[in-house]
Each structure stands twice: as C-alpha cells, then as structure tokens.
Amino acid sequence: MEDCKCIICGSSARGNSSRGIRFYECPNCGHFSVSRNLEDRDVDIHEQIAKHLLSGYIREQNEHGRVDTIISNKNVFDILNSPIIPKSLEEQEEKFLLAMERRTKYLSHPVKDPVMHQPAICYAYNDEERKALIRSLEGRGLVKSLGAVADGYALTYSGLKLAQKLKSEVSNSNFAFVAMWFNEKEMAGVFDEAIKPAVKIASGEQLSAFRVDQKEHNDDITDEIIAGIKDSRFVIADMTGYRGGVYYEAGYARGLGKPVILTCRKDWFDGELDCNGNVIKEKIHLDINHLNVIVWSTNDELKERLISRIKATIL
Image 1 (spheres, rainbow, N blue to C red):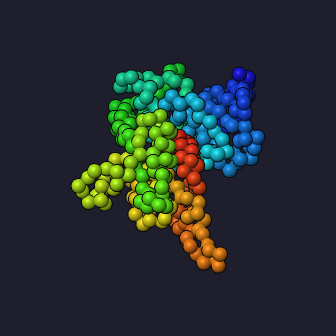
Image 2: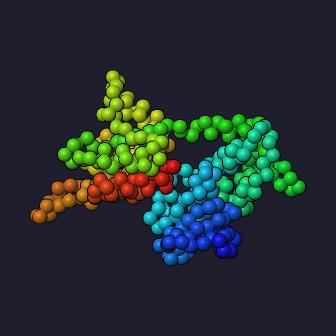
Image 3: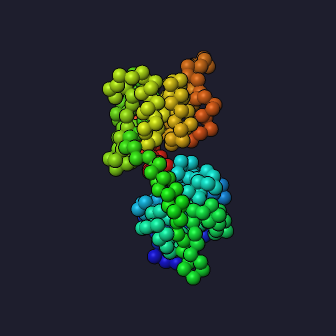
C-alpha cells in the first residue's frame, strides 16, 4: 500500500493497484476498490454525482462486514439509486443512531470509535454537516457528547430505544416478490433461468424469489399479492408485456417504501414496428421511462445484470 488521496472523498488514504483494480483504505469511506474504467475517467464523472453519498454507501457496507465493494462506471449510478441511500436529514440522523447502536454494549456506553467522527458514517456532505446532525440529535435528547477530553458520544435512554426500534424495522424477510407477465411463450425461462438464480446467487443463497402463482393459497389473488409484497425484502417487477397488474404491484411496493428493481425486455422497452411502419409493440410507458430500468435481451443477460443490481442496491 502507498500513500494517496481517496478518489471518492479526497481524504489521505492508502492504496495499491492490481489487475485493473485500484484498492483503497480510507479513514472516511473505509475499504473499497475502484475499477480502472472508472478511475481512468478521473474526476469528471464525479462532478455528476454526489460523492459524499458514495462515501456513505461504502462506509455502510464496511459497517456490515462487506469490505469488497467495487465501484465501477457500470454500478456507480445504481448505487446512488439504492434504497439504502438516505433521502432526508432525518434518515441521515437515523444512520448515525444505528451506527451508534452497533457499538453500544449497554445504556450510556461511551462510544469512542474514530469512525463516528467521519462524515461518511451518516452520509454527511462534510464534517460541518456531521456535527450539525449530531447537535440536532443532542437537542432531541437522543445523543450526548462526552466532551472534548473523552472525544466520543453515548446514546441516551430515548436514543437507544429509538435505535433499537429502527433496527427491528429493518426487514428480515428472506424472499423477493416477483411481478411479471405470466405468458409461457413470451417469457419462457425468464423466472427459472434468470430471476430465481440471480436472487440466490446475489444473496449467497440467503434469499429466494417467488411468484404468487407458485404459492398455494385459498385467498383472493389480490390479497395474496398484497401480502406477498408486504412480507418481501424487495420487489422485482418485469414490465415486459406492459401488464396492468405489474404496474400496480410495482407502484404499491414503492408506496410501502419497498426497494423495487424494474426490468424490461428490449423489444418491449424500445417498441417494435413492422416493415410498413405500423406499431407492433408500443414503447414502454413514459411514467417509468425515466427510472433506472434493466433492459435485457436474453435470460443470461437479465440474470447477470440482476445479480449486479441486487448486490449494489439491495444487499
């Protein structure tokens, strides 16, 4: 390892290169790697993205023991669209509380981990924002500072109680709900050869994918779908065929705050015309065209892209 600057946050770091991958050890971001194709594009690409959110994402991966995160030009924007990225100041505060809870052994336990003084621990833009967020938590009686000498923090009774509640709300579901077109001719092998193995592989055999038609039930199909979405870890919605039910299920999942991965076969995404210019297949609906849809042509392509997306945005 050699002294260098972190390509994400600019902090003094350590790094080395091997086989097209640049490895970093950053006190703010943590341990991660960057593919050469991203590094070669230098900082220009980073002017388009919120680098502090990438720092926070990498740090959160490290918090959960995942130190092999690779940032590339193929997944950088998927990561920034991940549901784990906080969308508000309140969610940033919750990230700090959860990080504190992971380090707290008992009520008022003093936490002196230097990582808690890094902006990435709560996805802060800089250290000034991190301190402002902590002052807000102190003002709400959730965190107390141990002072300049002790240089640490502790959760109050209310803070630990809230952090434990937030922790319990993290989904422990072990399956992904799949919404898709049930047309064996058009969708042959899509579930069994692409979606199902992708979920298994991406999660290290910890999660499985299921469709309502595969589960025995006596309830109304709509009730079963709603229950499945509520109980799922995340939802995969394939828009091929533009089935109204799939749109409904994806929208319902988003309304519940569930992560939703959208996919669509290329011919249905782009639309299709016959030799006379007549429309055979309409283009995908405009209301989802702006979303980060996985557009695929073969089952193998869908499988590989789903594995990457699930690893980057769900796990």
